[in-house]
Image (tube, rainbow, N blue to C red; front, side, top):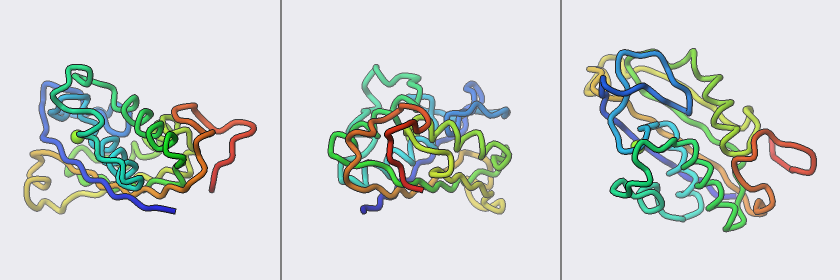
Length: 176
Ligand code: MG
């Protein structure tokens, strides 16, 4: 078993849609970034890669690479799980905290869990999304942007499980 941690933050950009955990969330402002700026997905990717000591999101998906312009971060997440699979690791579970003053994220947590689980080839019960505000403090409290933190547990012996295959089916062995 190995554990990894990931953090990401993005500034709000009113010209873009808000996409978090692969879900489009109704909001006055989206997030600035080279890809779709899905900070939840990016924090998870860094947690997964960190658990495998396999670099970080920037080394696998450089922000100056035009391939990742407006990229769907669910595809990046699928690829990160494939990187782990290539090293014979599979994901056990992922836990995320989103810190965002507005909009309120909590009511979208379930949809995010299901979308993220699908991208990682997991059950929704293997993915946790928690949301909180920053109690009005600092740049998050001023709604200049938001942040996400993620931890991921991985274990050896997962190459056969692959990535992005949707919900588990017959012959797949998953924890939880
Ligand atoms: Mg990011």
